[in-house]
Image (cartoon, rainbow, N blue to C red):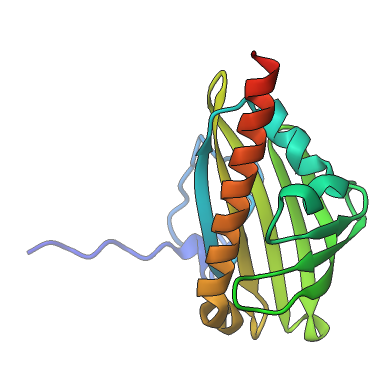
Length: 188
């Protein structure tokens, strides 16, 4: 009959009191724990784009031109800088246009743009992301998604999952068409 392993007392109420077995983890000893990822309900769409990350980023970072190609955000204003507020018109399939003001959390050229939206005094918090992952010299996968967090966020995300996903799908298709057209025009 197998024995149950002893509980890890290092993380329990006796942690740091010299009780229980002391184990040494050479991989993490002296290092901070890895950051936790966002929590909540996630809606995402991914697409492959035959263009290098620089071209895709050029399209994403030009907020003034979003009205020319982006069906999900037909208006985008602001500057992509950490802490800056972006003013966006959100138009999901089957919904009316809604103006939102989101705060840029993080951005890395040719890689990612993350912004945050807080509604109802923080009861609904969303983390919106566009991430570019190169697969080849002129081919990438773009992840376009949102985490719905806060007390009421996951229930909103579950209720709005269909329109939000269709909005991301439409945005990805339009981003693909625009980036691939730019790349093709530059390569003759």
